[in-house]
Length: 299
Image (cartoon, rainbow, N blue to C red; front, side, top):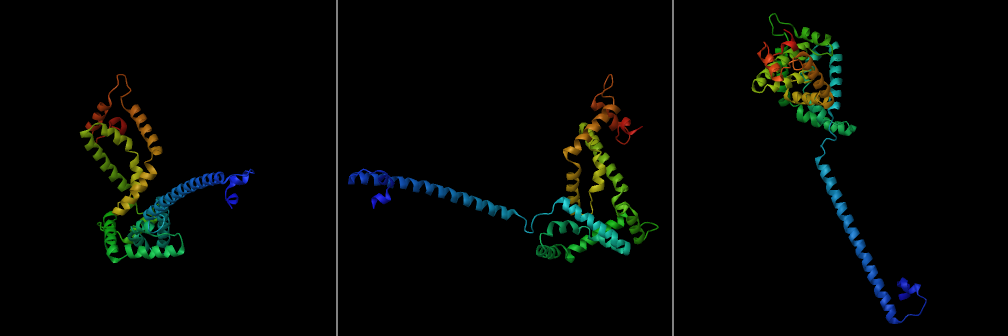
């Protein structure tokens, strides 16, 4: 039986004594024990690796959103475009629908972050969840009130003489993009520009270098006023992040900075003979009416 269990005995054709056979058997047992220990260590290592992977998977599950993958800002913007197109189409049939669309617009942000279209069942489940969480009268009353106040302040319905809501809707429908010019247009842009120039002028009094920064960042005002909406806090946060993503990357900022510095070099005396200093040029702007450099913005 030992010949069958011990390979070394099968390879040796010579007759061995019992002592030699026992020696070979002990060596074989030692070899098997070593193999068993190596396999045991390997199994322990694999168990530890498995446990680590399970813990990592559990952690990843715990940090995933409850309603599936979050909607990207690009997806959010696509939903907004579809919403505005739908409101514009329905307004052509009934002008009052534009008012409803304006009032319900703040709900888009919560809709895109809550509702998932991963499957029909998931769409149904998350849609009901969104309605329960964000469409109660407690949530809708202040949203409606804020929009109506905003509409009253930004249109001519309370002017003297007042316009009608239907006339204001006509302004929106006839305007490019289906948006009311007073709510989204050039008047708001000019107001933001005035606030920006006033802020730069105030900060420049503390540090003259701030005027240079204000001049460089000035081209961003146009995209800011056309992208960022202050209709509500959620809307301000959403559109501000969207604006940063779309217009404030290094790819966008590098040419803007370069162009402003070249413009500054050509329109001031910093490269003249003899040259002036940047601080002297800033002083010209601060001392000029409106806080603008006379060579950059005219006499």
